[in-house]
Amino acid sequence: MSIGDERDGMAVDWDVAITMDDGLVLRADVYRPQPEGQYPVLLNYGPYAKGLPFQVGYASAWDQMVTNYPEVAEGSTNKYQHWEAVDPEKWVPDGYACVRVDSRGWGRSPGYGDPFSPRETRDLYECIEWAGTQDWSNGKVGLAGISYYAINQWHVAALKPPHLAAMVPWEGAGDFYRDWSYHGGIRCTGMNVWYSRVVAKLQHGRGDREPVNPNTGELVTGPQTLSNEELTENRVDLVGSIKARPLDGEFFRQRSADWSKIEVPFLSAGNWGGHGLHLRGNVEGFGRAASEQKWLEIHGREHWTEFYTDYGVGVQKEFFDHFLKGIDNGFQDRPPVHLRIRTEGGFVGRDEHEWPLARTEWTKLYLDPAKLRLEDRPVADPGAVGYDATGDGVTFTTPPLEAQTEITGPVAARLFVSSETTDADIFLVLRVFRPDDSEVVFQAAVDPHGPIGQGWLRVSHRKLDPDLSTHYRPYHTHDEVEPLTPGEVYEIDVEIWPTSIVVPAGHRIALTVRGKDYEYPGGPAELSHFKGSAMRGSGIYLHDDLDDRPAETYGQEVTLHLGGERDAYIQLPVIPPRDG
Image (cartoon, rainbow, N blue to C red; front, top):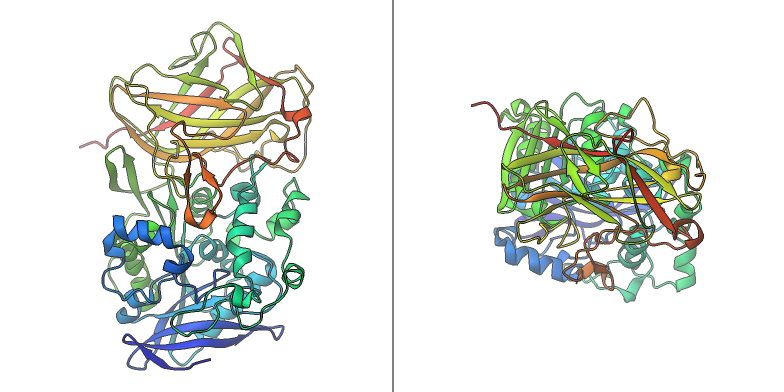
């Protein structure tokens, strides 16, 4: 361990020991301003090996980002860049101390690895309190970071660490069941990819299998090189634990946000293209957390990009300058919602005062079985449309729009379905098509060709929570299975995650009801840190586990029953222009 190095205008302490309440010692790197003094702290705690440079661990993502947004690399040597965490060279000169902690069992911290567990949450609490009581700290700790470093912010905030003063959960998640593990009750195999290909390779004890930190020459996963058997024994079987629990329950609640106990000021930042992980929790957190001082920001682009741009760093600094330094910069008076409205030509920033927007015109488009159209009034004549329960399904479209239409907010659908078996999985895709029938897609959080919106529901999980459900966001309990009687028709409400798109006149809006994940017709792409995973439109957030979807139950035919007394519809949040 090296204490007090002077590096690029910073005082840097490497591998600082932080002792947990059970005696285990975690390791942290601390980047501090010079001269000595007391400064607010930005802290993150997670498994991504604090000494692994962004450029080494995720090279193609870094190259793409700095090529498209060169501002990210400007004003920094970039020696200390880290995946999904702040660059200290852009914060320390402005009077912040930056602390990176390798979580228990990962990077250079020993112990049993158990992501998002209560033990990890307690460790983060202890780290916050440690940072808040150091002689170089002003006693105010902020949490900043993307994804993992955002998810555990929600968790620890419910414990109310005394020195936690503010946080910015950027593109995280809040509900370990609904936001990630089981979408609509259907198991998401993205966890398999993330845990095996991203996290497991950074487990403490991988030693000389992994790179060295170029700033210290030390191995990023610690000096020991353990056997594969030893490594397996020293980490939780997270995928197996999830597969063994198809219903929501205590395991998932322990790894989810308790909104009622979160009171710290926060800025919650989501991604319109984060269907599958990096959006729903940010929106739910803003709406449901008990904090009186809270803000919501939603943007687009790749999952990691906007956090590092001048825009992203700027909004975070305004927030933390106010809450960690006490600067009266007006942040406390800014509108509580800022949306980067998505258009085919880019993004347009706009402040709002609530979510969903008060001026929303909730617009129902009804599914016509005869014309396969989305109509603006209920369909009189009843009909039925069947499709392969694991196939491409059926698409309903509007006529070409007569005027430009903005859709911004949560989306919901009501369908009437029957199955030839005792269950069915429903995949809904909100889409937009140009006059030439080409599809409008966007760079999603982890896929270059994401659709406008997605939603999922296992029909046997159709039971709603009456207290949490709204007309615009159905909330399913996922606490019991209600098997279907083959051939019987069931009414279901499906949550489609929030979206934003300005649809030009002449374009068409569409809803596809599928039996499998959305696939972009233009062919697959690959993302560097998920090597071997073809990105076909839904990123790694797929629902292709044959154990979860056995053919005898999910492989026959599903029928949509539409029209007449069965007003099947999709409800869109249409936003009229502001007066004046």
